[in-house]
Length: 103
Image 1: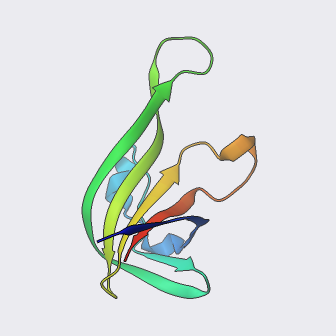
Image 2 (image 1 turned 180 degrees about the horizontal axis):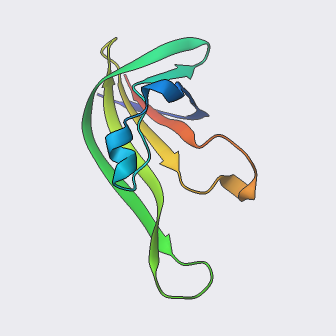
Image 3 (image 1 turned 180 degrees about the vertical axis):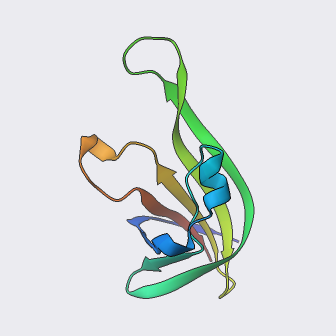
């Protein structure tokens, strides 16, 4: 199964966010997103991981930069999505992104 690079923003349906994840410090993965004018529903999370990076102010600590999720949708599509802890270039930009779509 080949993965197609997408890297486009998703619009989360906030009311569907997993608040249990938020209580542990992770982003609340919404169960529904808008993408390219359609609704995408998550059926299952296959795996998740974090991407970390060094503190940008020199403290030597590591911080979570992105939270990644490999998911299956209710339509049977396999997607890799991520949540960006700090928006790109410090602007108020989307924080949820569709990275790849399996074909």
